[in-house]
Image (cartoon, rainbow, N blue to C red; front, side, top):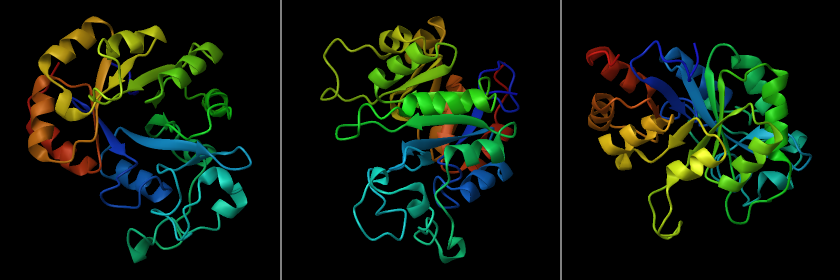
Amino acid sequence: MSLFETKKRHAVVVAGHRGASGHAPENTLVAFARAKELGADGIEFDVQLSADGIPIILHDDTLARTTNLGQQLRPTELTLARLKELDAGSWFSPEFAGEKIPTLEEVFSEFGGKLDFNIEIKSRPGFEADNGIEQKIADLVRQYKLEDSALISSFDAGRLASLHRYDPGLRLAFIYEVRPDLYPPDFDPIVTAKSFNSVALHPPFRSVDRALLEQAHTNGLNINAWTVNEIPDMERLVALGIDTITTNYPDRLVKVLEQAPRQD
């Protein structure tokens, strides 16, 4: 079963946002395991590089919020060995003390074949533009034979276009926000996504309506909404026929889906 198959275990694909990040420290192995335990079909997580070029799982620009480093340093300023010395769990709860920042390879090794993956390449103003992260992710996906269960996404259309040129066989998704300050007046997310052969769009959930779903589906794109944590919002999207919902609370979404009529 894959994020991209028509027939799914649930009427909607359940994706744990940074794992089950409402229940465990985000982007850690324990959060990913908890997502699986709570019924998620897949997990969404963020990938950056260490100073020595190893893909690691981390969302923020710096390590300050989710580790005990106590400094506004970026992951690219520390080697993997130094990153592995950090506590990435205590900030969430003392019970997770000692949880480590995982590498992408550790995630693939632990959960490949058990969960689907939505791999977000972190890229924004100030991030290193040409550090080879696209190729490193692509090569690991191929190495672990996860082409059918991995979706690689980013807000950065340039990174996705670069990745498509490097390996046109991988599945890509374009993430965007509905903000006029970010895009030109004629911005069309569907046109952008199709320019590098994406299989999905990832909009913020509040912007998803029936018209967007129909337009996307007509163009061969799934709609995978983020980040949906409240039950009424889940119910609305399920009724619309959304493809994937990304949530901090996979258990809430599973309960909603158990009570909803099947969308076949």
